[in-house]
Length: 511
Image 1 (cartoon, one colour):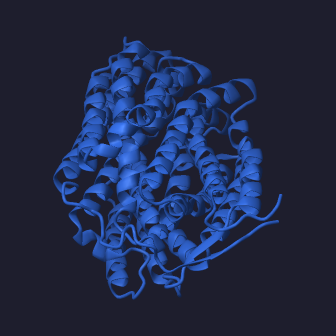
Image 2 (cartoon, helix red, strand yellow):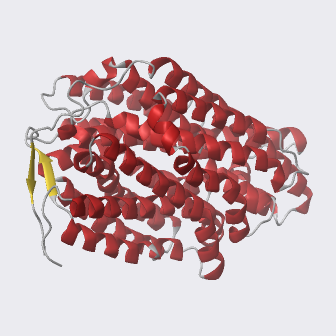
Image 3 (tube, one colour):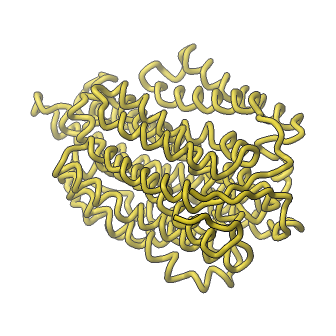
């Protein structure tokens, strides 16, 4: 291939293709894994905590490193970090597929998160650098449609792969996709960086990543260790203290990876809170919905994937159908309306019983798909309006950090609520006071008591009770996010220099 010229239409086109391909790979991996979790649990004999770490090791590494990755992208080059991310993510995906126990899989998922952080941090930054004005919104709409396509096809692809080839192939499939993205990055993308970025914020990285790990660990182990135990209390308090330390560290930095001045802008705060809320309240529910469909209702992985399609199809089509409206409407209207619809959808799903069929979830799936389709691209676009284009790596990193922190904390918190409700239900319906059994039922449904038919109905009742509890909890979280978006995003988020060219250096890269 001949060299490409910086700033050309060809560069913009290939950059968008590379970003969309890797975004598709990352999000496809998340939704595929959700469908494969029951199969992973059965083959690797994982407990609830081990199963939660399959999701949280990935999300936690992403959330903990994405701010640093954004700063590194601004300093050393967005194309360079993008290439690094592709290599690490693809290699870690191979290791996930080769995992021999749940611990090895969790570690490999953490490595995936390192590569994913580099890719997530540069995705919107690369788009924001190459596109301006209406073209930028159009590019983000394409990226949003890619997000929808990944979410829409993930459960189905995951079901097909898991049924036909086994759960390991949900990871192996990333390797050829990564190779294609790497080829585009090396041959058809150009480098860009922020000339003002001169150092790496190591203190911020250590305090933020450690704080997130301690908080998620405390939430995951709270039921097993006891919420009043010294271990859990000290872990959660230390995590909160380190978050405070992180804020203090960032306040003293000349070029912080988290620009605290942005939080003086109500619109930015609204975007951040709404992004966290939809992740913690809705996306974090997907693993538990998959367990419900497969281990309570008895569907196959493919069957579960097909049943997710009414939700995921709307996530794909709504951004495309509302693109014209989204360009004219105020962002706060679409964001708050989208989150409100998701909150209502979770209320529609609430109230399942032991005799319910999967169709009881159908109205909620449809409404949730519409809401997510409205909110996701609006929140992503709004995040880029807050900074100079030279620091889009930081803006992209902050937005995705809130999203991924929401997933990690949401999976842990909702899992804690589920396990506590399952434990309470087993105690009341079967007079069973057994925390390990409650954890097993939470991760495997009725399969956890396969050797004891007398407890089968109690186990199903307990899990259904737990599902209703986390659906209600998720609805409350997303509703709070809708209020934050409606109140705070009304204030214009655009900075005076938001559309002005920043001090960005470029260098053409060819073969």
